[in-house]
Length: 405
Image (cartoon, rainbow, N blue to C red; front, side):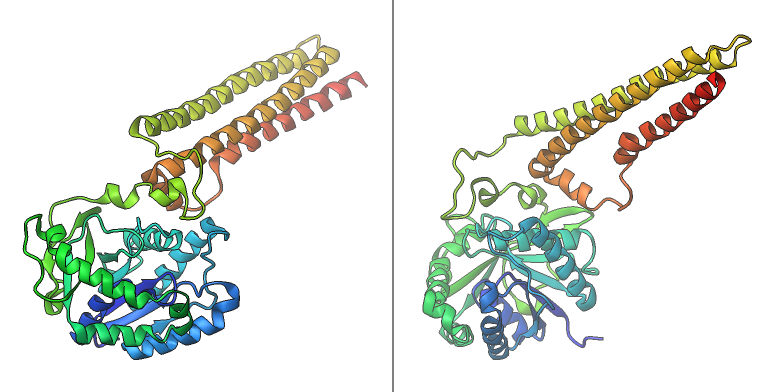
């Protein structure tokens, strides 16, 4: 059993642990929390060994525990990001189940970088699925995208900034590519001025200290995501503040700029956000195609049943007519083949609409992805019933041919 409460930080990349919310993590560390940094990815495949070594040294300097997955998740824009999303949920879920953190810290779901957003959505789903034990508190930082709803200010001084920079310098080659120490300093200087106004309201006085970090707190309460209470960080009571009454589930599940338009440098032409009316039409279309499938199922079942009754009467009458019975059976087999083809095409249409609905309707996607696993009932209806009817027709045809012989 762990002697201290655990804060689990989720890093999409090495160095995010010292760029995203380092001042908050250092303050919690000093207050006695155990900080565990889970590194989900290690950059491009050829960089894994070098970046892992830098990350170990950075976490040693910062006083963080480090969790590395057996196999880093591929999070580049050219990778299979659907597979990456499932991998992230599994990795974060297993880690959180084992560590039972009191708090999870990660990027926000609208951070513009596709990997940061994937990680945020995975954290959201892990907490909703209760795979993090009793943890329901989530702190989010913004790096590439501004936090639209900040609730916590973290003031720090030059000494803390030097400590952060000293740990960040372990990522030597990454700083050679782009010196993120300037970003940490510049963002903190800017937030010392604008942070209090964004958190406590326009017209609030700026922070007297030189540097401020911003975070958004969300707390899952009775199935609702509530925004945290605006406050200045007090590490000794950081996790005891009740949330406010502002529900932000819609924001957490809303389509992001990156999902719609793509990442910087790879923007998609012709992309546009879907409005509420468009989403309603997609849902109505899905319901319509489901109804079409069921109506056609009923039509073919009734038609097949009528033919089976006719064939049975012809073959079992006092003056049976094997030729007519065989003809009806042949027609029934042909109708069953048509039914199977119609079913397959309709299911393809339904799946296409379902894919669109899952992209446009986050709540539907969430319910669909977390439903109990098992055999698809649609597949049984599509293939199973026509196969059974075809077997019945083959039996009737054999009986008719036997009578002819």
